[in-house]
Image (spheres, one colour):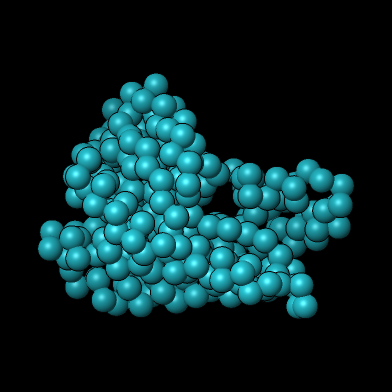
Length: 258
C-alpha cells in the first residue's frame, strides 16, 4: 500500500461544504489530512461533509466563515488552529458565480463578487502566511477558473476577478517561495456542482449548453468535482514542490482554442 500523500497534515478548505471544495475535503482526508471544512454561513452544511469523512475513517471538523469579513477570517484561522493545530494547507475554494451584464449589475452584486472571490482569498492568505513563514513550510491553493483565460459576455466580472486571483497567486508566490511555501492555483472549466445546476438542467439555458458543447474539445461538457480534487491533491503534495505561482488548467480543453 502506498504512503498517504498528506499524512498528518492539517488542511483548511473554504467552500468545503459543497462542489469542488467538498470533493477536495473528502480526498484530502482519504490521503491522511485532518480537514477543516469551512462553509460560508451554515456550519451544519460543513458538518455533513465531516460526517462523510468520519464514516470513511478520516478526520475533520466543521467551521463557518463569511470570507467577505476580515474579522471572521481572523477568528476562523484562530479557531481552526486551536482545534486542529497549525494549518499546513490552505485551499481557497469559496466562490460565487452569476451573470454581470452591462446595465443589469448592481453595485451590491459587484462588491459581493469581488469580496468573496478575491478579497477573501487575499486576506485568508494574509492571515495564514505568517504562521507558515515561521514554520518554513506550507501549501496554498487558489481555485480560479478557465474564465480567467477565456472571455464570456455574460460572466465578465467573474472572469475578471478570477484573472485577478491568478495574478494574486503569482504575487504571493514571489513573497512566500523563499520560505518553502508553495502558492499555486487551479483553473477548472465547467464542473458539475450546485453553483451551475441551472445551466446543466434548465431549458432556458439550452443555448448556453450548446455553446459549451461547441467549445469543449473533450466533449465532456462538465468535469466531475473529483477530477479537480485530484489536481488539488497534486498541488498539496510534495510532488509539486518545484511549482510556485503556477495555474493548472483543468478545463476539458476549453482554453486551448477553437
